[in-house]
Image (tube, rainbow, N blue to C red; front, side):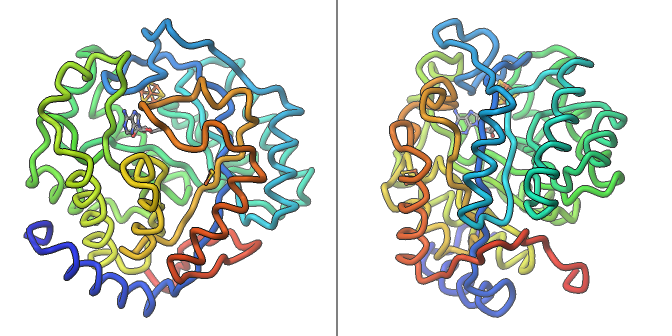
Length: 335
Ligand code: 5AD
Ligand code: SF4
Ligand code: FES
């Protein structure tokens, strides 16, 4: 029933819980969108395989290491290596090599989160052994019926396979992150409350969830008339963040970029609603335009140094402090 409470009530409660548990400290994770190649065709996503209107790219090792170095020098506790989903021996080997290089370059100091989609348990294990200790794999929605509506119906887009991948990650020992989109066409308030219960049942370590935002070159665009107007969608997303902080007081919750598309201060508001993780975009400028998951994605024209300064201001505006140089894992004794 929580999502039916007024936003202000939820935010006041969540803010108090946040201060008492994770504190007013925000962890930084430098986001490197290292490739937009993807084997999938999710109906909502701008970099889906079927979108021929974008150029496909992949950062070189040097470009990745340069971005990592930027994060390290600016005392970000960790980085997130994110890409579309690819499954090949070549891809596995490349990520493994990159992980080892990053560990060496930063003398093991920087924490590494991977977000490269569904892989076999064996691949996940190899990457874990090479130095990745966190993995983000959004379930997108915990409702199998809704999942089937927003993905093509074939074995490559199978809800149970995705769920199994999340379980593998946990078994291997990753700090596991997941998340959903909020305000999807056909999605109900009950669906979203079930999403929150799903996170709790899975005992998830971190959550990145944000509003669904339409993209003109995707199949779901035709249902845009079913969407809540931006202000209400933002409100719902903030309610989800606050409700989750109340439900799982100690976990990491990200103030996601999509919130900023709906409102310039969307991410600060998420911090006030209980989020404690911020992911400044440190992808080299020339690639950003091609990693457009949705229309009006922010930071497309802002250099890493600009996002860096902007992040500091936003966190300050929300009344929080940056926890420089910390990985920011959920502590086991708090579980
Ligand atoms: N609106 C909001 N989020 C999106 N994602 C993909 N497409 C969209 C969209 N149109 C999110 C998915 C994915 C993450 C990388 O980006 O949740 O897991
Ligand atoms: Fe690929 Fe992820 Fe986009 Fe789906 S949401 S098309 S898996 S990048
Ligand atoms: Fe990129 Fe503000 S975080 S410009």
